[in-house]
Image (cartoon, rainbow, N blue to C red; front, side):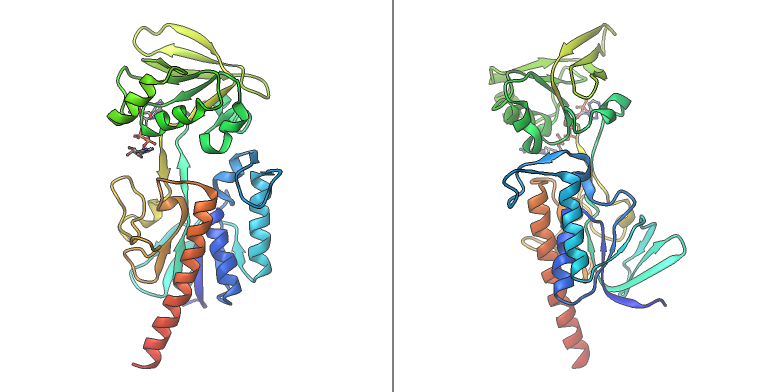
Length: 314
Ligand code: NAP
């Protein structure tokens, strides 16, 4: 058995790194398995203007660098690799990276969620330059501009309605002629004079060099191609929580998110906590993820204290 740490944190977005800051300051010397794509979803954004404390805004990757520096300052240790396997059947819990095994008395899972993407090379190229997956984060940059939202679920409609505060028009592009979203959201979107719909339509290509200029569209029924002039594209076709590692070991909900107890980050396994987007499909903000990471670290500290106290008196 390798050295047993107090705490392993798996994931390094705002939730994981906030947990690392708090756990570091509590002298738990956390080991953060930060992943190859360290830093989470903010690494895919440009300006972040709604994170308190940065009145002039900050670049997403720079913000995450600051989180990491702060965690390091308090003794967090980083492993820059993806975890391949976990064993939560018994404490100390195990994490494997290839043959390398890590063990800890407690764990915080902060592996986040990934926005589903259309899978177009032009979408990747213009991500953060007019292509976005977060209206709350980026809507402000599209004042008085025509934009499009792709998707037909609650997220797409919610984002489209929010974006009408800024944009001149919001065109919702949906691959079918029927929305998946709830009736109430449909009614709101259909009644909004700034929202237009393109039914039975797929985005074939995002056109632009350094900034979005237009979309190439295809009618999914007739195959007819067309172009739509917009300066932004919001991809709102759902998120997938990064929970493949934990399937069968932690309780997950129907959409694959880790189930945590109300007002807590406790999971179905005592000693394992979850924070951030991996357990939150409602708010999905860096600041709420950071808040729940803080909760998790405090809960770990208490849990370790209680279990050690119980062991000493048994
Ligand atoms: P969702 O319900 O899974 O909807 C995804 C939408 O994107 C669907 O309309 C789907 O089309 C479309 N889509 C998926 N892959 C696509 C692709 N490759 N190309 C083009 N379109 C694609 O996801 P969501 O809207 O993020 O919602 C997730 C969950 O959160 C839902 O349970 C939702 O009710 C909930 N939510 C609730 C609220 C609220 O109540 N205010 C807000 C946001 C989310 P098809 O319809 O053809 O499959």
